[in-house]
Length: 173
Image (tube, rainbow, N blue to C red):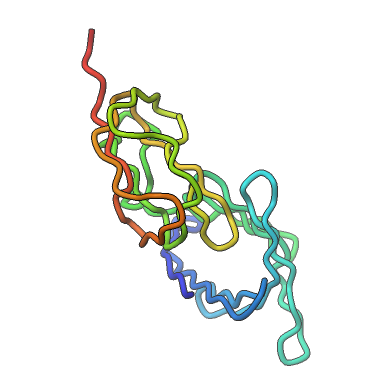
């Protein structure tokens, strides 16, 4: 599996590409730098990347934490922490601008669907859990409302950006 995303770092755009090599091993390219890691999921939903020697040398990046549905990552390299943020076009809705459509943040497998059509849900309620890159992503609609459609089921593969659940905003009382 290969995943390519564009992020913003210190106001500049940077391309990040992760490619599964084998087992827990991943090859990660950030701009022109290529490193290999053994990836381990953390209980908080992040991931710890242990550098692996490639051609006799070990990369300088030691730890990467994911936060908030793959929207922000904190990467510690050579004693400095960088924050990579998803561009505005990829940020999901936790705020008032959300359209209520829950989309897959990246290609992965649906671990659980926690809602059905007709359910009344809250903005921060987990509706779908997707596993991608050895991390669990708990996805919410970002608005209070009623589930209008559920287009996935447990153990199915989804593509990045695919609509999984649609929630219609609750009517004002």
